[in-house]
Length: 177
Image (cartoon, rainbow, N blue to C red; front, side, top):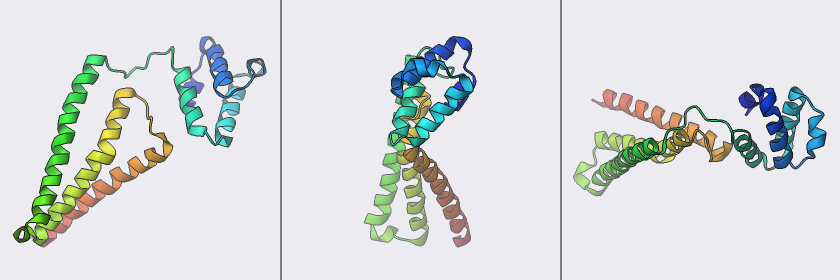
């Protein structure tokens, strides 16, 4: 949102005033007296003080961008194509990792140290595919993060933890060998 507000030109400034007035429920004539830096400060302060900050920020972002073309939006047929491919990949990743965990945990003779390490890799991969990749794919398709700031933080945390877990597990497997 800060980047959009910084790059506003005179034509879009009136649109910004109207969006701000409608979303933040303020009188537009009061806002028209403010210059661009003052309106940016007003928006940031209002959003920081609001308990509905994420909803307001997203609504303002959508309102400001309604007439602008997003440079990375894909045509519908490409979105459909990538969605189908991604769905297949996600199903294979989920199914494969669940099968690995089931085989090792359900069969007594498969319970070796190395196989437990493989289960750990499967858990990390399953977490990555279900808790990170699916949400990032939606972000990729829409050029927008609709899940809020809290899950954005959780999403990045999950990505780092699962990659670190996989790497450390591979290191331990190499030491075990």
